[in-house]
Length: 554
Image 1 (spheres, rainbow, N blue to C red):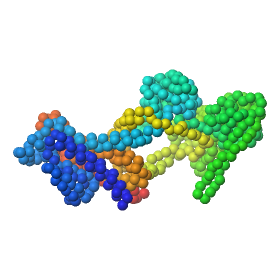
Image 2 (cartoon, helix red, strand yellow):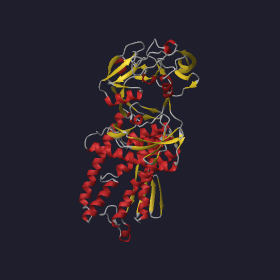
Image 3 (cartoon, one colour):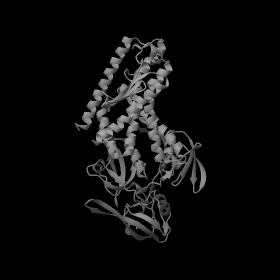
Image 4 (cartoon, one colour):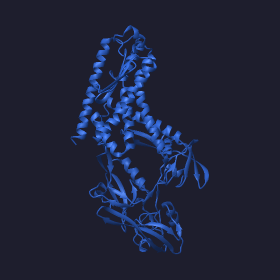
């Protein structure tokens, strides 16, 4: 019953709004409306107001508005000839038939507007992590910098910054940042990369190589003879202070351990401990102290003297250390072990796990060489090949993903959310952008189907919408309203397709009439409508078969 109610609450308002659009437009241009019906079948409720009969029918799978003279060959009483749709100017006929899809387009814009208006707390455009060698690093951007302008445009959130950067691959941008209370200007050129959109189409994107999260000063150790290891420190420990100076981020830790004093170094650190319970695992941190005497000789990334990234104390950032390896995963089969440090990926030195992930993403399921090192061991080379796996989301939609099976160390923290400045303009811009983006995705999917680049197995029928409605209702009102926005966009998009029996088909007939300067012949209209009906029925059967396979044969 809950799913039935959710389905009615999802579809009913959208049908009503669609048909209401036709009704209001018809009244506006003085076209006679005989019946306004929500649902199909014999009316359960009916009431005549003026000249129009308003009905509620038992089958909630659509609705209709009866317009006088919708077919130019219908007989029209002489006294109503001026009120027939076929005798109205072309612009009036366009307005009446397009009003339904336009009403369905307005619904998602409003829903998205209220969503963004009520979600006005957003991650700020503050840089938390900068990848070594990235466009941002070369431009001098650092953790803690707040981006306030890009090419003169105000930047109010992390998403706005990402959007502006993504749209400018290989284009130099003038970025204004706030650094320690002062405004500074930087010039940066986002690097071009290709990211697959939700339909799997690669799209060019500009990237800076920055992330919004800050990493805690968690350490890794590969040299068991180092002062850090001999002083009791282990991989996974979190440094909280050095010689009384608080340490908050991994960058602060790197700055302090890069040039430690010749004298004794006093550390305070937290060690994670896990306690298993019947209902789960409790992770807690225990505070410890250590005293280290830095060595005069240097040891580097391979644990050998005079290597490039030397650490006199043996303390290294934990960002590229492996915390866990899943059993029988590509990482396990390649020989990757918990506690290993990833030094290079395909010959590229890495200092952040994000760099490891980026290289692996570009490689997809092709073999990749890793240079790793275990505690006390020599660097060794591994070859790993990620698995391409599939899984289903809550709507039972299947999608593919790459699986490595290795989890890194790295306790990260996102910055506190901040209220958006100018929330109404932000919500207006964001709702319009989201609506346009979704329509572009629909157009791309249609083009791929027509050109046989995509199959019809993704089509969904009323059975699928029934299941989606129930699932979305279980997730809460926000998810339900977002699904309503998506379904409304689909209704508008599909109804505008130039298929006879749909609104788009009638608009096509009007366009042909405008070109020929006379209506399309009745026989031609009947043949076109029959073809349109066959196409719609065929697509509905395919979609129904897809939903049966997805929801009942799984």
